[in-house]
Image 1 (tube, helix red, strand yellow):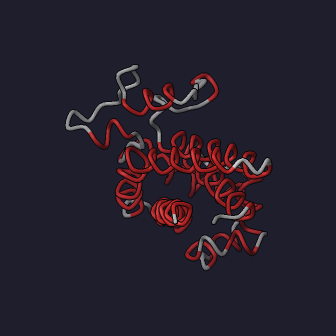
Image 2: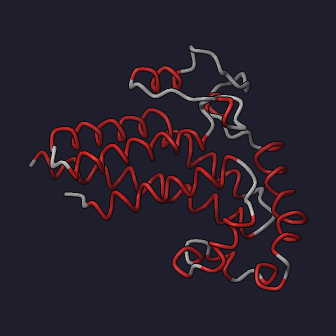
Length: 211
């Protein structure tokens, strides 16, 4: 059926992944992951990484993590659906971009001045979209509006089918194989696994609602 706790956990995961993929990790976020056992368990290779526990966090970010982020996401594998899915291989930030059209059709506007992304089809923004719709779902659950809950779940499943799950896992596994630090290896693997598991989750609970 899907519980409030499960929906909140999905919101939290999409928020975390969106934050880690939109820009370099900051001191506070890395320290929170490092010192929160339940969070650190999501990053198994990072958990066993000696440098995480022995090296000064600021130096770890500046000397190891930031260069890896740049190499993976800014140089080698651009995190944009339009780049990954089109033969031309260029970023399409115009209104003809199918992802942007999907956002607009469902009343979602992106303020590009508040993000480092060059186009709204950046994987982190697609995850933010899922987070926001899941938050709307949570609000509808609190109001016991079952029709709205179902509509929002169908919307999320549709977005995964047509966009995020259609390219995100393949992209993230490709990025994972380029990563040189355990942290970004884990970020990519976690993201790929979560997208697919979330699609399975939504499919299952929607099927239950039709029985």
